[in-house]
Image 1 (cartoon, rainbow, N blue to C red):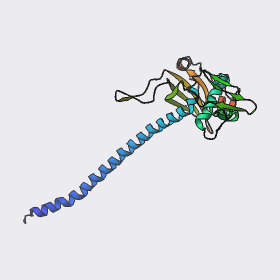
Image 2 (cartoon, rainbow, N blue to C red; image 1 turned 90 degrees about the horizontal axis):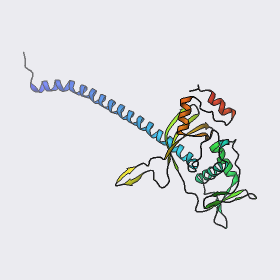
Image 3 (cartoon, one colour; image 1 turned 30 degrees about the horizontal axis):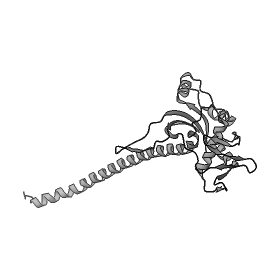
Image 4 (cartoon, rainbow, N blue to C red; image 1 turned 45 degrees about the horizontal axis):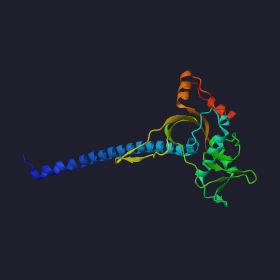
Length: 253
């Protein structure tokens, strides 16, 4: 029997090793792509939740900054709070279109506040336009021109929102909102390390998804909310019959 030379043996091994190695390489690439795809999807989900929280924080800022007392319906909220939050929601959304008067005050039409109030609380809420006095800052209302004067010094925010939890049932959202106290930063350097300040308290915000955004249905303290959940006596926000119909689609807790 003729002996095969080492060179021929090497050629035979190479003949099968090449496709086998190619298979392993393809499987490795598929595995790498699968893992990468999973990581990307997971990262996107995390980023999406972060973006959603940030979106709600921007929306709630003019509300949280005035630390409102809890209410079951915006129609039962403090009229002055509704006015203040609508004014600052208007200012935070866009000030470029407004002009200054001879007193160096920004002139803001009352109608713009009405529009923003509907954006925050729904069209059923009607603002009671009046001069706003807030500590040493006054925002005069001119009933003849139907405008507000906003001083340059403006308003110092008492709290900023930190949305920690989002629950969704259909078009109804329940947000757990932390109240970050004034004088703190979202991230601050302490001894070379970063930290997020702890909220002073938490409130529960119920929102309804509408065509152009959201409407606030109620604001409740965390203790009140938990007590209602445990006792099954949660009160339905009173906004419109349409809202009540939306709530009725979900079974009672």
